[in-house]
Length: 163
Image 1: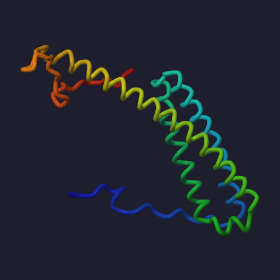
Image 2: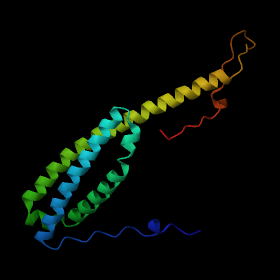
Image 3: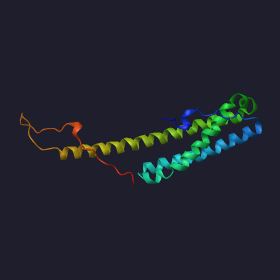
Image 4: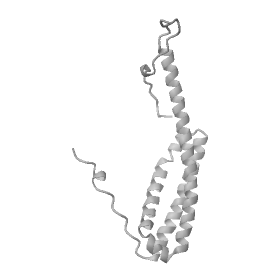
């Protein structure tokens, strides 16, 4: 059995940034991508809050692309952190502050998504339990009480992901 090519070798370390001009370009690009990603995240959170999951799912491709670009630039800056702190300390500090604000927005988004996931899981479990209860035979046990179906005999349900 052969290993998947992306798992056979660790990812290459990003190339360090050679000069201040390129560092400025990478930092500016990272700030732009961070702003665009924050916009997508806020839009996604709003759509999920409104229950418009299909529209929120349409943002996944743009979100994934921006995330990939964000990590690529962030890793390059991280690889050159020591020299950049000497060359452009004010820009690095501005990046740190913006990143802190970005993380707060991201945490809100993750909370919204986790809440939506928990609610939908609760609904599916409730439907499954109700179906199991209705499909169980309505009989009396030896004690004269209604038999309670065992939890492990519930029939599986199918969920369509097409909205």
